[in-house]
Image (tube, rainbow, N blue to C red; front, side, top):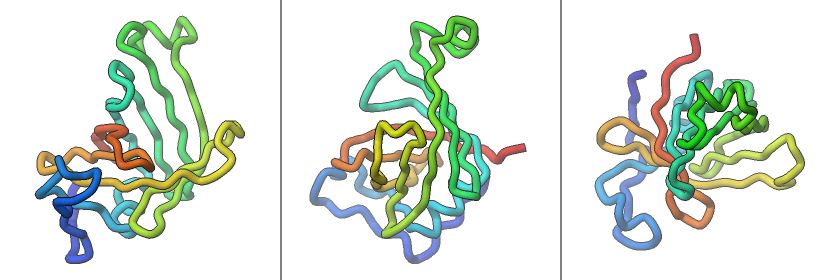
Amino acid sequence: MAVTLGAAAASISEEGLTDGLIGKTRLTSTQISGLFSDVIDRGEIQNERGISAETYWYADGTFVSRWWTQENPISDASDSGAVKKVTGRWRAEHDLRCVTFNSGTQPDWSCAEVWLLDEGRILSLNPDGSAHGLHRLSPLK
């Protein structure tokens, strides 16, 4: 998937919670909407090591996410019930990706920054600015 970044992409400042990301690109709402529309996102959760996830982000603003642990890889977890699944809605606003879950466990929208790294992976942050996940995106077939 080719990523085109316009002049609207902000440079990372040397202050705040994103100090370690100097030289990377914070994505705008337009870029987030474009990148996360009709893609499969294969991610590694950073704030809870050993968890992998696969999320289908749809252009209509919905998503379906499954995740599992290293102890129960997807091939084993599918049979054992160890794969967790959540559905929800997403949107981009104020240069943040926002999500809410259909399960009712999170009644409000949660919004956070998304960054493009030099090697083409996407880094999503938690609302507090800590690292959430490293993602590789590919188009839905």
